[in-house]
Image 1: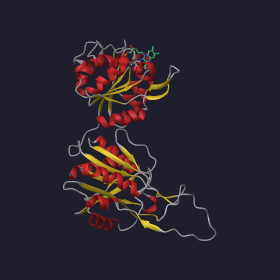
Image 2: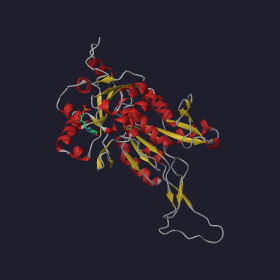
Image 3: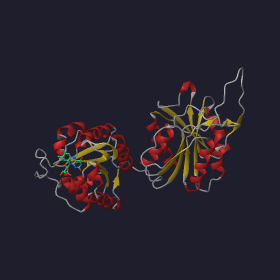
Image 4: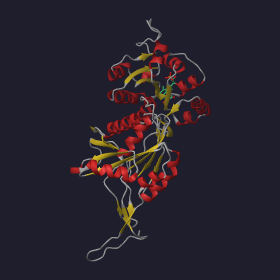
Length: 395
Ligand SMILES: Cc1cc2nc3c(=O)[nH]c(=O)nc-3n(C[C@H](O)[C@H](O)[C@H](O)COP(=O)(O)O)c2cc1C
């Protein structure tokens, strides 16, 4: 992605150095524009060193009016896949909302046809000011995107909304808006399930499994970045990804209800959740007291979410399942594919504790024609992107 990062005159400007470093390390091309006030809070030298790119802007050492063989503001405006202003002052948003262009950044913001993302930071009184809110509403109406400021203790000593959002959340929004899109997925609504389910024995004890939900979360992110509209149905405790509507669920029954509600509107589904196959026959209302000697627990089957979605599948809808296997991987996946009416099964080898948590992982896609070349080994975020790209290529 080619990211143009505007940095304006807020105390939070020093945080934009971390953002520039993070995104540069991920392989994105990051060019910075400093306003004159922004340059008082963070040196251009820091940004140039972290990004390996010339810093553009208005402070005297950068001299935005220097004679140049290209028209700098138009060149930068055309170059960018995304323009992000982090931190964004009340001033720069007000200027852009009113069509003013009196320095390089404000001129680029008017000239660019790329998506514009704002991460405002300011004192609570300024953020709550009716004029600022009117400017934000005006920019939103024109299709500009925002990462809202957080609530917290501000540099001025006041508490309230106005603190620059976390850098990782801003980076997420930048990836979501600026990463290249996959044409077969753009605008498609996709259901993603992830995480473990929990089947309660009583108010404190539960039957669950070792899934964390990271594959589901990374798949939802990868789909979002590819231009799809993922809807995540998530068990476990991981944070929901930025910009992805997420329904948190507890039991298999609960997950099924959420999935069935969404399914008629979806183009397809990636079912990465590790759904419990059994639940205790009874859930005790009060904590069960221990007894002397051996105890037994009667388990009954939980609903089969994939089989249910498959039965309710309309023409054109697709279903991709995941399988964790410890032996005869392809053979078991082919049985699952046919029995559950799936379009593909991604097989995870779980021998020796592989496949769970945050370690690099490998998946073998199995479709009606048989096993396909494996994806990985890759960290789960890259693996999720590989899965999405592989599937988008088959659509
Ligand atoms: C110490 C200091 C901190 C400031 N912090 C902020 C801020 O967080 N948000 C904001 O909107 N303005 C802040 N301002 C005011 C802006 O710097 C001022 O409006 C400036 O003209 C903005 O210019 P720019 O938008 O071109 O960068 C601050 C000013 C000073 C002196």
